[in-house]
Length: 343
Ligand code: NAD
Ligand code: UDP
Image (cartoon, rainbow, N blue to C red; front, side, top):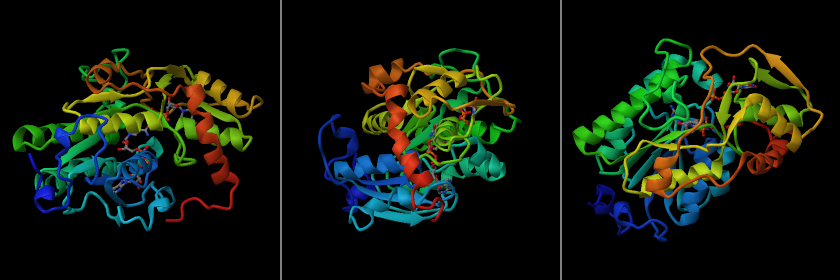
């Protein structure tokens, strides 16, 4: 099936669904919403390197021009300052939808805006995907499992989410986004893909965005104590960003709608994470306990059998290998001339 983008002459001669995995091909026109953010900017790098034309749509709430400015001047790259809750019409072949604050500090900042932006996802799907027949990939989250009663979490698990808690604007918002995505798929034949992403880290994460990896790494570099919330025995599974990007691209190019868990099954308590940060950056870093946040999930670990079997994907970078890869980027941004937050 050819999209209108192809009919209008914007796309490649080959529709994505017919291209075998791993085969080099050129010239797709791809929108990455949230492409100036942490994950989005790494995805943009891979797509541009593959030869695609990329349009980044971002309102710079948590993203930064600096994350993508190495592509400025490249005719295959465009940057549009736009809030995805407003309608946008573009002729494209694929949409990777990442625009959304991911850190609890950011999504709790304006919870009403957070939940409403998920509901207004219909603008994006109708304006970009349904209208031209483009494929739409939603980046959902492990948060749809809430404080899980099943461990590890499989995609078939429906979750244990507090609908009225302080995290619900994000958790329930992403669940709503999954529902809307599937309803457009079933009801209007929109080609969709759903990824459920588990905690991801790497260079270009926002410094001081409150997420545990960015907090610990910045604290160790600044010789401040590592702030462990609660008793530090809660667990998370940490995935390096390049593994996630590979998973997202395989999902987009593959034949399966999903949802797929994309995460690293290596599970760590926050105290164990603090130890890895001490080993990597500063063995003398102190630990300081702080009260935990409300509704904090006790454990989190993906079952990735489905992604292994159907996408041929599994993470390659362990926490001990991945953590050092973000340290020089953080050091440069903390101590360098370069100022944060100048959009
Ligand atoms: P991020 O905050 O670094 O990037 C999000 C980007 O979206 C930013 O550039 C921001 O400016 C932009 N944005 C936010 N709201 C927008 C809006 N209304 N209109 C236009 N642009 C907007 O976050 P990230 O870690 O790169 O996460 C990317 C996606 O992956 C998010 O959808 C997030 O929910 C999902 N995810 C991430 C993780 C993780 O651990 N990083 C885990 C689960 C899911
Ligand atoms: N956390 C912590 N210290 C920090 C920030 C977070 O111990 O400085 C804990 C937090 O309570 C949670 C875990 O780390 O249990 C992961 O938090 P994060 O905000 O990174 O991600 P999420 O809760 O969305 O998985």
